[in-house]
Image (cartoon, rainbow, N blue to C red; front, side, top):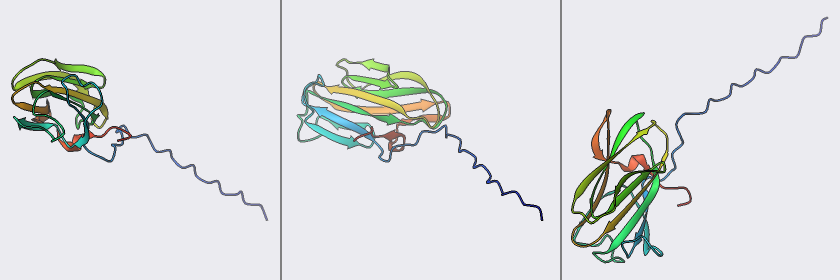
Length: 169
């Protein structure tokens, strides 16, 4: 009787790395609120904000802050649905700056009333990009809004589902 060869185990196919980045579990951006217009010193308030669509008018975002002369730095990740060029819009009263993936795309660090600004950046679907938004309020009305638009997506507020808290928050 001839010896039968041992069956060879079939090699397991390697899973292809997904082109989409795994999103962190928590949606929103991390906000650091300062009691001055320069984002200096230690924040008096740190919180998670689901999205940036605030119209405080002549009120304060929180009792820890005054109604005027404050600033906020939001940080986190943004995940687009489409691979194309996006227009990133802000409406703010007063100053605003926006960085996406380390590129400053909106720079309007000036006293202004309810002004819309726009920047442009190419993004890939499903990829996570670092985003940082800095805002300051001088006097009077206070508001800030972050929006986006692309060829496949109509203009609207960046939803919480596309924003993610930074690691370690």
